[in-house]
Length: 280
Image (tube, rainbow, N blue to C red):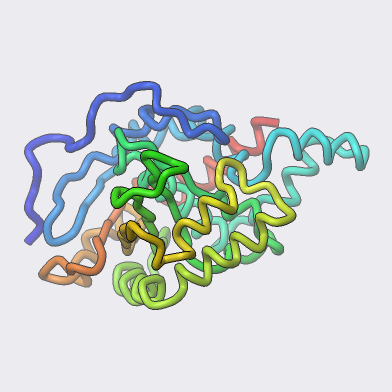
């Protein structure tokens, strides 16, 4: 049974900013209030909260795919409009768009959940070689480095495996997220960090640098950094109660299961990407 909380476990907003998205993470805290935390975290986004996403997140999600500088430079270099350039980065409607939206939503959730500690991470959607396919490797990665460039025992890497379900069907996002989270813990996160380091040699990862990545790639460096894993299912609110029986009856010591219920998820992500396009 899910143990319900009396009130939101997150603190009031302040000026904690996600620098390369120019976005105040404090603005998201109310969206991700935990209704329960044991044996899994349950978040139920309200209709009113989801209705604000187009205005609140349009520019930030655009920058998850392409920086403002690259958007401007590419448009000028090729004689294209910004809208035409942006269209080469965004996914088509369907499963990839649903998956991308779920991952980006978890990117904001993961930052909000660490609040008030500052975190940062690569925007993997900028690195996709094919906009019609998901980004490779681990879905969402964040770093917490409180005394950087000094390494400390409080350094943390957060890694989330994300599965989305927006429409009825046979998919089992909770079960699938848990299974793939195990891959992150055994080898995929390590592969992800090496891949990011290779990409960082020729591409801009924003506020993530090669030394940041090396802190976690060189896992034997003292003091040891912490690793925290999540299996996250982003599910349409009309489907979530039917999926909850797939959640384990007991919490795992190896990962945290997070279930995020979003009202009319397909409509929400479709409207969100329309809002992203409207920002240019």
